[in-house]
Image (cartoon, rainbow, N blue to C red):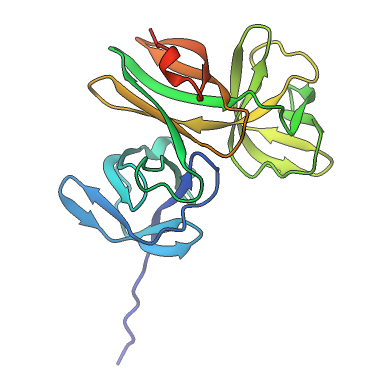
Length: 246
């Protein structure tokens, strides 16, 4: 009697991250839905969920985790590694059931808004030293020991009150990073670098972004997109009612 051979294919990895901290979401009360159908991926630890034999087609589904806002996720395989398709999903802590430190919210409604994120203007743990455009290698000054464990950062232009987004491909030894795409904008040596915190935008134009209330310095630089135009605005989370997006 021949033994049956069952083949399993890893079609998608989802990594859940708390956008306010950058750390993995270790909450186990997590549910995935496509339309009204619940999906049942395998939990692999460290906030990682594996979808086996999932058919590699572009799709949308919802992620609902206890202590976090429900979020819609768009899966686009053209933007992923074909060997191990991986999607990072940034969850926003719920205002009423936040874990750890309390959170502060900035919310509102703006017609045409399609994206919202921010970086902290608190003195950064690193800044740019140089950039090799051909190799896409960024050398850093580090003011204290810290790993660049996240993927999405902003290179802040303090005078213009803007920042250029970049994605880390690999952290190198000797205080260096290889980034996914070359920098486009002109930068000044020693310009600060900060991790990006993602907000949430709904189809009706309502938006929300939250940070942990765990420090005295709560001034952030918002980046948002309205009608395809990128805009920036300084926000003091201690007085969020004084900032209006337009």
